Length: 292
Image (cartoon, rainbow, N blue to C red; front, side, top):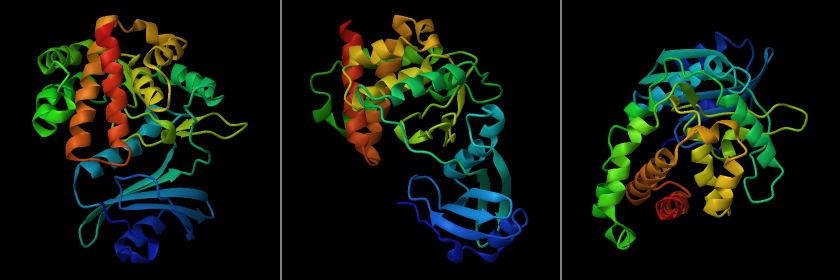
């Protein structure tokens, strides 16, 4: 598990970097959510509240935080604005980013929730944004042998599945998810900040991509299945999102098979809280698509 630091435990160089941007600093509280950062604090300053996030040592986590720092320009009004970003030469390299502090609660994605209408409205806005220079999802998905790897790690989980067929669908996925829209690629209930009277905000933009405009809705379909929807009902909800209809049956099936293989392999090799539940939901959705 990644080590978390409190304000008083940080190197002096990190304190100095933050104080270059904030005249006075009072720690309001730590933020427990999130698995990919060494530092997550709400700070109060004369300039207003700031969410301070940091990563220690050069790693993929540092790259994801750097991506997140750029998201305010990619999705203005949806992603939190970035107040400052500093590379710090301390005992080891640090990257610290100060974000606009966004208040709100997570979305309730269970059947019948009033939040589903708010999420739908947010998706309509997000799906209309251009992906710009973000990495194409098709490039990220160039590796497509997840089912072979999953079967090797957890053969008991695939005994009634056709791994060869699923791998063929995965191989087709990269070209079928190509597009020019901005994608978040990790939307789930805790990525939404909902506050009465304010527009919904979307956080944790560590892995944005460009691709087909229906993709983020498809990711949420799997999350809806995990939250209690049946696959058919989840797709019926998705059909109310404007860009969902632009995904062909073949493309959506390839997406479902790819995600189920990827999440299954990750649940077997590097489990995180809820990994098995998500893997099961993704596999259930892939089965549904293949049976259509």
